[in-house]
Amino acid sequence: MKLSEELKWRGFVNQTTYKDMDALDNGSVTFYLGVDPSGPGMTVGHLSIAMMIKHLISAGHKPILLVGGASGLIGDPDGKAQERDLKTENEIQENIDKISAQYKKIFEGQKFVLVNNIDWFKNLGYLDFLRTIGKHVPMRTMLGREFVQSRLGENGTGISYAEFSYSLIQGYDFLHLYRDFGATLQVCGADQWGNCIAGVDLIRRVEGVEAHIYSAPLIINKTTGVKFGKTEAGAIWLDPNLTSPFDFYQFWINTDDESAKDYLKIYTNIDKPDYDRLITDFDADRSGRLAQKTLAYEVTKIVHGQEVADKVVEVTGILFSKQIYSELSQSDKDKIKGSLISVPVKAEFLESIVSSGLASSNTEALSFVKSGAVKVNGHKIDDPKYSFSNGDNLLQKGKNMFVMVVKK
Image 1 (tube, rainbow, N blue to C red):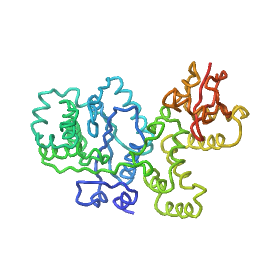
Image 2: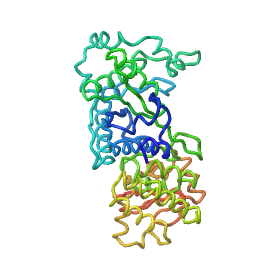
Image 3: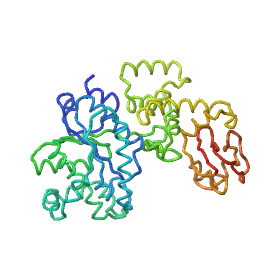
Image 4: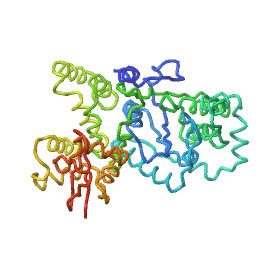
């Protein structure tokens, strides 16, 4: 299957400046993807673009992965109704370190260049930037951006010069990477199209060269209709310290049937013949949840490695068996603890439920307890003044939300 055909089959094609996607089928293109390090790592939303890039690499194209140490100091305003709070340089650097580590894990065994745009912005003077970049960017183009119009409109909250200028930073990134690496393509999510156009225009005006953009659709949760990766408990992160490997696996195992079919093409490396066989078997007996089990295992393996994926499958079997936690072997308890988020106990039982992320407030925690939705070590707890025993305690809400609470 040609690359263009595979990208379309997997659902990775949204919009492009190429006349035809066939342009990616021949030769080798140097391309880049930029990530704004305003968050503490990447989510499963970012992962979809990363999976698309894996296919581009396999087809012989050359990737540059950019983490925006400079742009992160401003924050991407696109899609935001109001001004972002600025993060400190230390916060940005911590986020960059986490994102870089996640990149290296996802693209393990594949060649790529990792860059940080602070490296070329830190010594670029303001007047030089205005003369060499600002002089080539029409105000009409910048004012025409949808997010600028919404922020400056009658009900808008306004926009600072810093956020208004964000697209200039991203445009200069593309120009710099063209000059230093020969990059002629930027890949992005559909919501970044406007920012990316700035780079294409800048390269054309400054260098007289045609550059391109290729965007992939945003993944939308078909059940909720919201941007993929958000749940009742919050975003699903690739960082195991933010979303435990167990919760990560459970997120995928709990997808609905039709979504699981789509996500298998997007989030795994399964090829079309194997996919067709799997779906035939799945449709013959959906109660076996073959699509969800395959999806959950394969994505967990890509993000956390095979050893962790195997362990999570085993832990899932233990937790959903009828065994009481206190009666498990120490070996099984250790496996469970290693797969879940651990939090320290709070003075009050309800506060511990909240700090664990299983409830948003003491009031909500109390309602969970009263409704019989809370268990500790496999036993239902209906006393809001319950006290944890010393050591590790398995706190459970509902059928599939688990956290380890540690009392010293």
